[in-house]
Image 1 (spheres, rainbow, N blue to C red):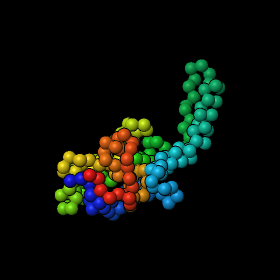
Image 2: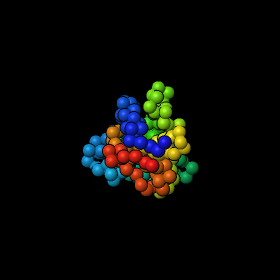
Image 3: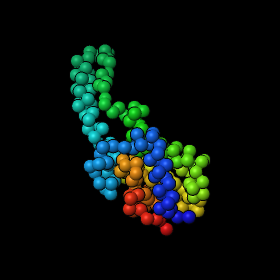
Image 4: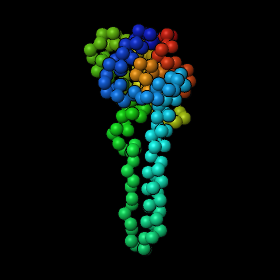
Length: 186
């Protein structure tokens, strides 16, 4: 049972109908960057870091000054500047690749319990990580026939148009296609 357009359509419909998934995935960047490039999520991540650069500079400057003026044995408390996108924030965790993959996997797992269309094709769904190049996560779909595919919504930030890969290709960072252009995998 290779991944068919009909099954892929059901997967995308399930994610598009889940308010939590749509909230985590959606970005205005999806309207400006072509989905085929797969850069949208990376650009959003970069912009979040870029937005906080002034805060990190202020933090480093203040702490360097405190260290330089502290007398021996007198440890000045470390200054921590407020961040727009702190790395430990649950808000940020939801919109990076791992948060998107976890949300989409959860939505699809709920659907597997009630959808005969999905459960007749799909054995399991989970968040999958890769360490090839930059660490990344996507949503792994394992079919009943043992074949597996990764749906990567972070690459497009478009709930209606994830990039789809054979799992091995996703791990090797080759051969993906957007849902809109997807016909089937054999």
